[in-house]
Every structure is written in C-alpha cells, then in structure tokens.
Amino acid sequence: MAGKGKKSRLLRHWPRFLLIIPFLLVAYVPFYNRIEPTLGGIPFFYWYQLAAILLGAAVVVAVYLLETRVTRTTDGASEEIDSSGTPGDIL
Image 1 (cartoon, rainbow, N blue to C red):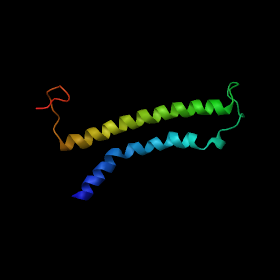
Image 2: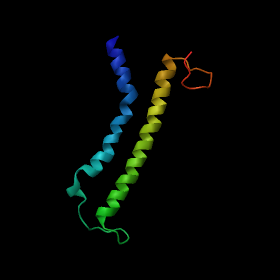
Image 3: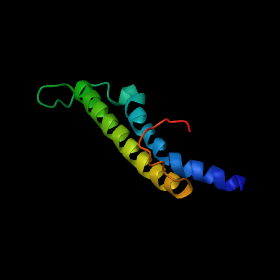
Image 4: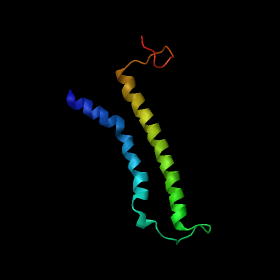
C-alpha cells in the first residue's frame, strides 16, 4: 500500500523535473559570457539570455499543461468531481 502512494505521487509530479532545464541554461555563466557571435548586431550574451527567458517560459507552460493533464487523469480515477459548480464549498 505505501509503495503505491509514493509511486502515484512521483507519477503526478514528474513534469516538475523539466523545470531544471531553464536553470541549467543560465547556471553556468562562462558558457554564454562572450560577445561573438552576434545576431542582428546584438551580442551573444544578450540574445542568449533572451532566448533562455523565452525557453524558460515555454517550459513552464509545458509543465503546467502536463501537470494538469496528469492530475486530471490520476484524480479523476480516484475521486468523483463535485458538480455543484462552486469551488471551495464546505458541505
């Protein structure tokens, strides 16, 4: 029984591990601390950071969508959804 709960928790939260990608993109500064190559006259340092921000936002959106899909499938099988339409009501 205890193993099943831990496995379902890991299955539910696995998309959060994808959030490591944006962190790794900017963690090692010597990799992108340079001027060349330029892109449209903008040094590498600046456009790399902008690309990392945009990719980080895309990863966050992907994690959100994956987690809501995984949560919907795991919670939907174990609980009935309240159809009253008012979230947070205490009966």
